[in-house]
Image 1 (cartoon, rainbow, N blue to C red):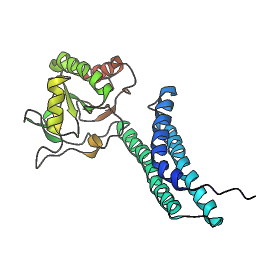
Image 2 (cartoon, helix red, strand yellow):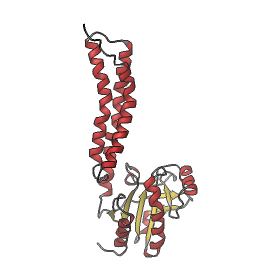
Image 3 (cartoon, rainbow, N blue to C red):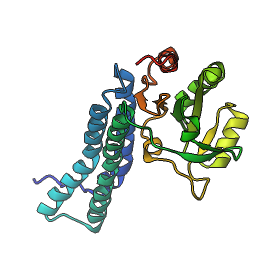
Image 4 (cartoon, helix red, strand yellow):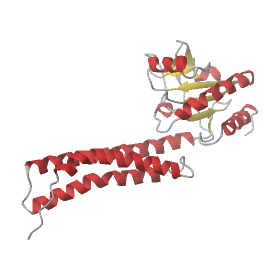
Length: 253
């Protein structure tokens, strides 16, 4: 007696949910197990992409078997269509890997001129990087939803105040809207250093290096000559970043 061919309908309909769930669980698990999440992101995201392929591939295999057996129904076609669409979910980890690679390359820049920015802060004040020539500048890339950002910001605020007389300035850059950032500053973490709004000015300038971000927080260090220097990873203790700032303030190359 010939065994019935399983329908691809339900595997196909479930493929998007299974792909998303497996991807999230895999990413969280690998990140927790990683000895250095800042370095092995490409491997982790590649594994996530492969895992996310499993549900739609499984559903499409059932579709092929049902078609060969002549047992394909309208529901089977629908399931296969959903499975094919769910393959697009794999673009998320692939895109994330590409953005992380670009960000890693930007964060590793050393000895090249930092690009100029011109942006208004939450209080309406306009800031230009060129206004701080001769100072050491730290540009902090952050987001309101990012727990490590929230933990780092009070330390950045303290450091900005303690090193201000030595010629040190901190700027926060987030692509979130002004209302979201204002509520965050008012209700969650209040800092005195400027929080810049990249799109607030019609003639504003905010280079992609500071806005194309895949991992938060991220820091860019700029020396007194306006040259970029790699900042310690935010996975390291804040004291490592503080020491890097002090080296630039002391002009130790």
